[in-house]
Image (cartoon, rainbow, N blue to C red; front, side):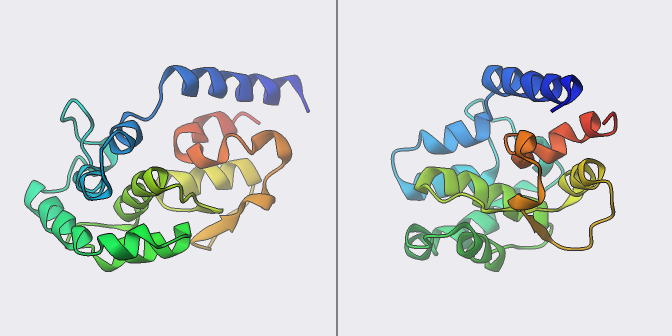
Length: 169
């Protein structure tokens, strides 16, 4: 592994440790799953700040989305795999909710129930990050984590945030 790659990884690890995802933390801190679903789908952290990915969505649309998801609590609780959880979340989406919102909400809820992605889902910034990292255009909706070299295993979940580093490799 080159020194440049190791520096990127070290920087990411320090940054992530100093800046945990407050939306995931807030979802995890809820007392029960129904509260976690509400918090995750409204995309607000403990300060009431909406996640940047969902900043343009209308609050009323997020409320409908939340209502739909809360009806699926039992299915969510027993989903067992991230892929199934994501499918449930996508089945509840309303106007304005795209792939990124569904993924973000499924990821927040998944962290609460111990269900994590086994693949790297590609949408918006993550797709750009993966393309820069791998060096070619990607047409799939997801790629296997095994497509990444060992040093980048820690970075792949945050491809969107890290895409700017990959252009320098």
